[in-house]
Image 1 (tube, rainbow, N blue to C red):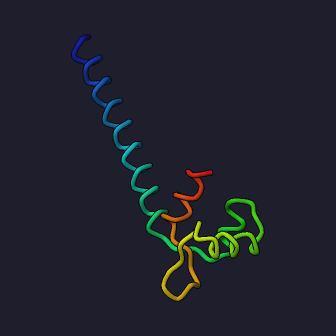
Image 2: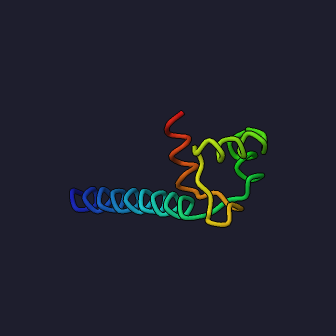
Length: 81
């Protein structure tokens, strides 16, 4: 009986650890992505012109060409609000 309980506890711990790993991995992938202005506007429920204003104010970072917004800067902006 104890052996079965121990096995169940270990299985539960491993499943939970894998879930946490998947969440972390997914979060890192989102941060590494770049987004169009329209995507950011839709995702955080603001207008595209507000996204442009945030870029001009230095609150959102873009790629060198200025066309895409980094996921990290979106994350940083949302955390600072």
